[in-house]
Image (cartoon, rainbow, N blue to C red; front, side, top):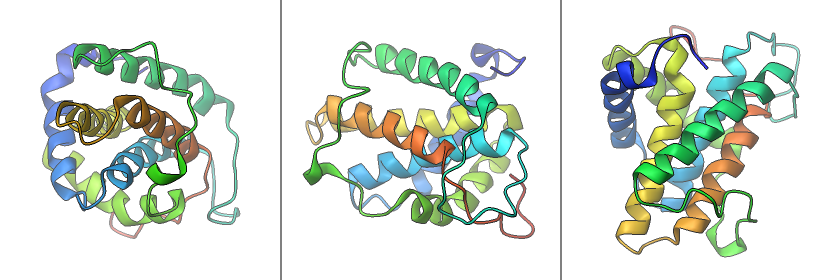
Length: 182
């Protein structure tokens, strides 16, 4: 976990998450959840500082630091669920039903959304340490909205969010576009 306080920096974290939500396509709730969650995982992977340049985009990479940090990020997501009235104990590890799969792969999602996400973080003047948390918060806001509107079962939403955070943190991304800092 970053050395700063989530509570202390929550206004910036929340602002960046809200800006990022406005940049998501918004056409398919499962794809939007998976997209935000994939970016959260990708931000964990990028924060690890591992040189990915010799690895094929889309291949799997395992990094111990990412696994350890992923536990902290998962705990944050569980807390967000509890704070938004969702059951924090269930759904996270359930398989995502075939009819609720996103319309894009992790690699496609991170490629399409990373620059929009980084722009949202810059606009909100968020600390770099919070990037995984910002994207995870955005994913959980979509899960909560889907549950509130009865548009998506929250158990499926939580499963999507956790599945794609993990997938995003273990999938070699395309290189960051020049002029954009991860």
